[in-house]
Structures are given as structure tokens and as C-alpha cells.
Amino acid sequence: MGRVIRSQRKGAGSVFRAHTKHRKGPAKLRAIDYAERNGYIRGVVKDIIHDPGRGAPLAVVDFRDPYRYKHRKELFLAAEGMFTGQYIYCGKKAALQIGNVLPVGVMPEGAIVCNLEEKAGDRGALARTSGNYATVISHNPETNKSRVKLPSGAKKLIPSTNRAMVGIIAGGGRIDKPMLKAGRAYHKYKKKRNCWPKVRGVAMNPVEHPHGGGNHQHIGKASTVRRDASAGRKVGLIAARRTGRIRGGKTEIKGDD
Image 1 (tube, one colour):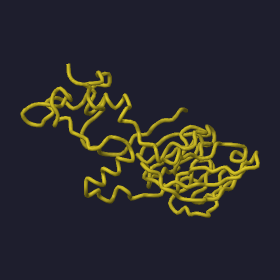
Image 2: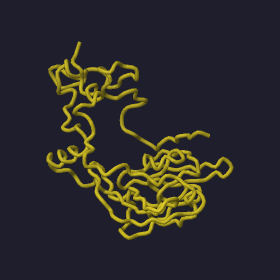
Image 3: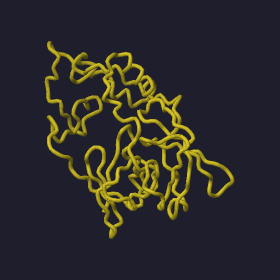
Image 4: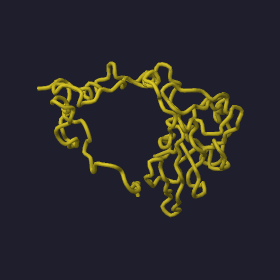
């Protein structure tokens, strides 16, 4: 009977909870309404801000409420090239310009988009990290579906009514710069969650990890592990379909037809 291993302890929370104290809030598109479905609504970029624990900057966009006498501030993921004072247009009849939000179905094939909705009205779920984008590949007017290529290279069928922001997410090239020293990694993960530094399993004792122990640091068994393994055994390559280097292209994800 071994000890409760690190991956099991993470599930309980406690010291492993995300560090959310200084975060600015969830970055989402506007909630879909009559103005976006049938025409467009204009907002203005008030500020571009840093969000701790997120690689991409956020844009504070100010909209006039269509139903009440008030203004609504929305937190969008900033697209590259966005600036304060810029007008942002959201809706079916908005122009194809960087920062504007419109349904995928009205965009031309080959359009570069980001913060793409996976399901209609979910306010943005795909291609949201710094420098990422998705590409509109084709439209099928009969089924009202569009095919998009995701940052992973996978192709996915989504409803043509799903909205996306035109352009790529700002903050690209972030991972090109090397960390160089441990202090930078320390500060990076301090704002994210307690997951650094990470001790390798082979460097542990057998009581602490399935890969631990032995007179040399080696796993000593296959690193793949079945999907229904017990929690304390589930380390390494979980339910791997294949191992080794990735060669060739990506497979296509079929949406709900």
C-alpha cells in the first residue's frame, strides 16, 4: 500500500487551487441578443489590460445597453492590432475587420479568426491563447454548418451561427523567448497555480510514485497505463493510442451532423 501520490492530492484542491485573487474576470464575447442576430452593435475599446496567469492581454470594451439607459463593459480577448479608442462592431452585419465579432457563416473562406464559439451562444471557447487563431475552411449552406481548422491542426464542423472575433490573439511569440532562469518560471507559475517545480516520478521512492525506486532512475515497466487504472497507478501515458514522435498531419474531428 503506497502513499497518496501527487496527482491524487491535486484533485482535493487545498494548496492546489488556482491563484485567482488578482485576475480580471472571464474573457467572453457579448451575450447574444437581437442586435447581434439581425444587425450590429458598436462598442469602443476603453483599455487594454494584463490579466495575471494569462498569456494574452484583455480589452475592456464599452457598449451601450440596447434595453436600458446604461453602459455595459465587456472583457474581450485582445486581437493583435487592437488599440484604445478603436470602435468594435459585433453582429451579423459587422464588417470583416480586426477586432470585430461576427458569425462564422458570413465570413469568407480562409478568414483568420480567434475566440471562436464551439456551441452557439457559449461566448467563445476555441483559439483563445496568445498568438493562436483558427481558419474558416468551408461552408455548407444546406446543413448550416461551417468547417474550421483549429490551432491543433484538427478540422471541426461547427454551426455557421457561431460567432468569432476577426484576427489572431495578441501576445504571440510568447514561448519563443527562453525562460533562462528558474526565477522566471517561479514567477510564471506563482500567478497560475501550485504546479512548479515538478519532481519526476523516477526520482521518487516506490512508496510515492509507480515509477519510483530501483538502483538506476528508470521506469522499469511500460509508461502506458490503461484508462480504468486506479487513481494511484494512473501516471505516464494514459490510454495512449500510440507512442513515439508525432509524424504526419492531424485527423479530422467530426461535429454533430
